[in-house]
Amino acid sequence: HKLSGLEKRLVQWHIANLEYGCGAPLRLVSLRYWDQDDAWAFGGPHCLIPSGYQRIVDALAEGLEVQVKRAVTRIRWSGRGARGQ
Image 1 (cartoon, rainbow, N blue to C red):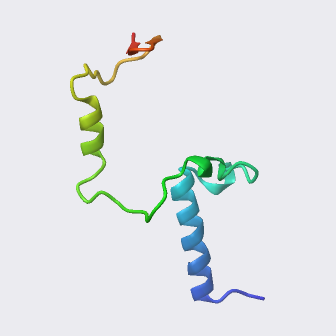
Image 2 (cartoon, rainbow, N blue to C red; image 1 turned 45 degrees about the horizontal axis):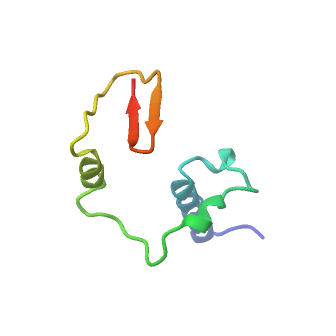
């Protein structure tokens, strides 16, 4: 069966959706483990944050010293937190 133009676009949409969800081209995704995070998935409907995810990153980084364009050579972790060097 040869796919129609609409069917081809639908298949391409599903491929793009899977790649978006996996964060990688499907050729790099393991068939066996592609959905291994389902046990930790959030329930309920999917959504996007209209103002962007940066607000979450900013809130999590509040009070932390964040340096960019610096190589991390070591991470020290304790029950109270972590520190990069």
